[in-house]
Image 1 (tube, helix red, strand yellow):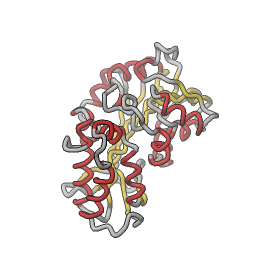
Image 2: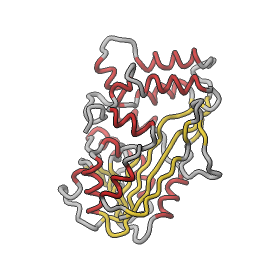
Image 3: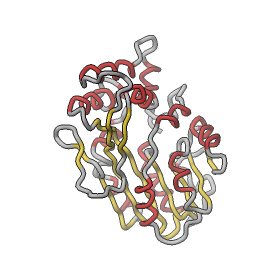
Image 4: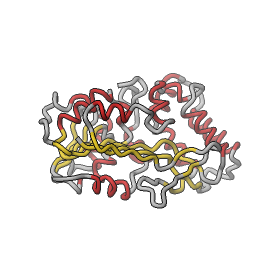
Length: 289
């Protein structure tokens, strides 16, 4: 697990994470379920966190289990969704922890597979999936402020992705993974571990001016809505990168306050409560054993 992980920073607020992180659209769930072939008995959710994705898919399966190595995350998941099962281990240990080979109908992972050792995890997933079972994983990259132009995009990149601020807690691989929508090696790894029928979709990409575009009439993974700067600050404070920064800069002004203050000034936002339109850059993969 990388040092930038929510698992390796102290005082990570899993309750706040659950409260401010966005959920996923029904269109994405429908897309994945339509792709799936065969029985819907057993589902596992790798890196389930507080169970945001587990609960969305659980109703489609006879039995669903969320897996996460963070006891803090799982304590929130168990409180929010007592009807579901959650276990404390990662995707690298599926068979070691007793999941039988060829026993799982679908494996999902939402905003989490980058925390895993992908080679070990993909190999484990291939072992526990039944023949033609589905493996699906997806990410939102960052919110784009529709009406604020390039300035908003550049400020987000400055504070989140670059080494000047919180981006210094990302490995180069992690940074490249997100900014290139998974990079070039995901397909290679999936093929290496004998997955087939690989489907990869980038729903929104960045234009040169930092705004988003999509060529799809009805995107399957379109996330959009409104947010104000108060809620945006809470979202920033839910990052493991933020928690790492606070740990390493004791006594300094809150980096989230600095980020939001500069954001408000540079983008000429009148108040912290002004609603701002956002769309997310997103991508997802689906494949079969």
